[in-house]
Length: 159
Image (cartoon, rainbow, N blue to C red; front, side):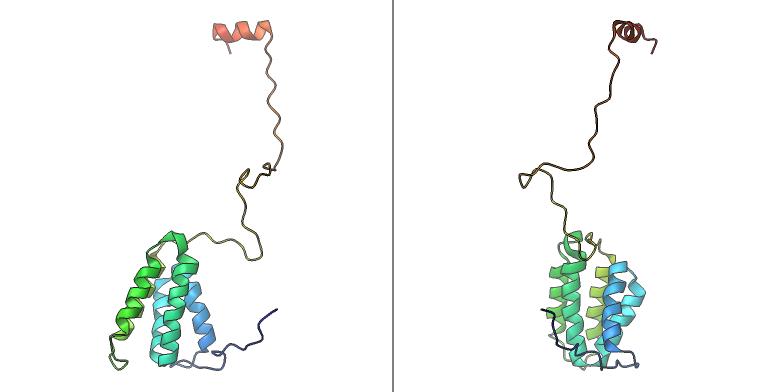
């Protein structure tokens, strides 16, 4: 059953008047594409807008580290979590808090990304692992002329 809850960020505007839900979506896309400069600007916008949006920024960065980076860089969730824990030791009035988010974003943009499959498709199963035979085009073996004449030609090196 589809969720009927409304996105709480739809009606929120960022510090510079952007729609917060669009900024959140764009952040993930820019990190996924490795566009560091754009991703940093979006993260900065989120971090400076409000404490709630800054907290949500860290939630998204943790999810991105697992969902988009995944096996591309196994330490990504660990580093993002460590940066998140460190930033919590600073008071919100300290301007350097945003540097931790910027560092996390730059790191995630530079990480190799896990290969993603298209939505709505099932992952391919390895042949024979589930007891079924591999399917695919049937390849007929090549027919070779093994007559005495062809063997003699092959042995003489005149192929």
